[in-house]
Picture 1 (tube, rainbow, N blue to C red):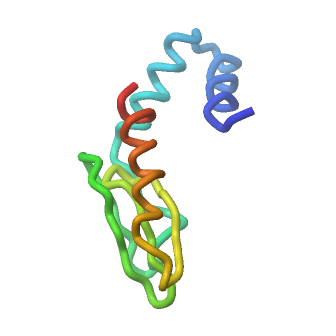
Picture 2 (cartoon, one colour; picture 1 turned 45 degrees about the vertical axis):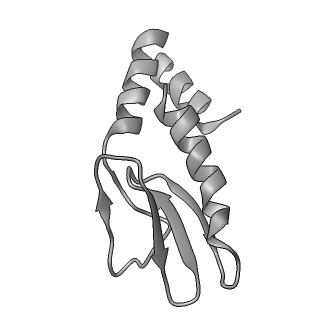
Length: 98
């Protein structure tokens, strides 16, 4: 079971009809996010609007995320930055296009 399904089930148990729960979850997906889990915790970034691929260079790792705040992946040099393209494209074409 996916996290999305768990959230929808929880909203339905709280009294939301399925259509309302799906709408609420879709709205939440489109709102600006505060970046957590990736990047430097001393320099948090709030990302709003848009869906550009963002690449952030850390001390020993490189982080990829979408401008909307969706964390994509992290890698270590000398891995190719191309590894961010697939997850970002999937996000933009499947999650955002809903």
